[in-house]
Length: 37
Figure 1 (cartoon, helix red, strand yellow):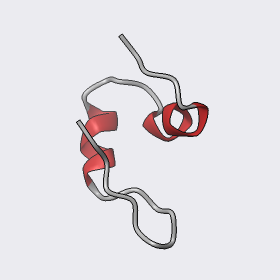
Figure 2 (spheres, helix red, strand yellow; figure 1 turned 180 degrees about the vertical axis):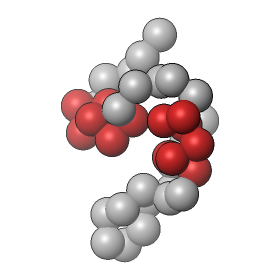
Figure 3 (cartoon, helix red, strand yellow; figure 1 turned 90 degrees about the vertical axis):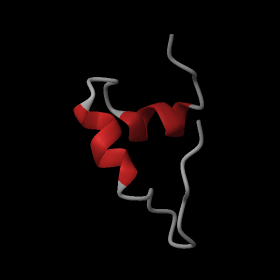
């Protein structure tokens, strides 16, 4: 899947829902550019 990033570098609102699913800190994952299993 993909995440839309605004021109300000802020992830779209879907990130809140992704975080709620228990995937961990999605923003840290993006920053580290490491996929999760």
